Image (cartoon, rainbow, N blue to C red; front, top):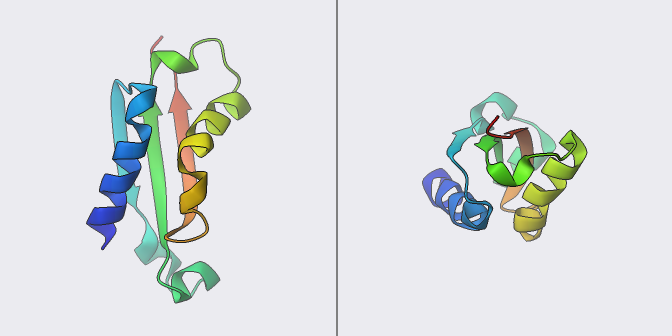
Length: 87
């Protein structure tokens, strides 16, 4: 199931043309947490793209959340984001 969710995240983020993308499933670190009780996943996302150039951290995160907002809070309960530009 986690693999399907990771693939879904990857597909949703492709329009940002990432030069680097790593999606780490951290669900096991949140066992017993309210979101994990329903079967939702926790992910850490590391993404680099030229589309982040000149943007604040908040603006970078908004671009990511714009692509995946409908996946939250289920099937993804939490998404930690490290968003960098290519410079």
